[in-house]
Image 1: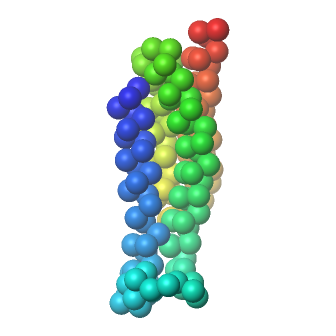
Image 2: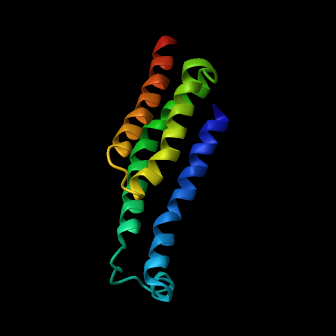
Length: 131
């Protein structure tokens, strides 16, 4: 479980780099000057940068649920079985979610989001079984 928690946090860190990466591609040297300045006037995000930023916001919201569940599972020694499969499902779904969102792959993004939240439900179910 700890490994899955750390991998999920690593994914989050990697995901924080995607919006600026797309902004650099869209605006070139202007993006670098903007990033090094006071940023009083925001740059217009490219389509992909906007999608990457929204996917990051969604990850922030999902981590608000995942991290407490993962820590509770660790606390109660639920590092295998239902809790582990739930955490793995969540992580893999989040890995697929980012490109699905950026590439605007129709309903796949929503399906993957639902699968990821199913993983959270598995983790919660594992915790409820301990009560």
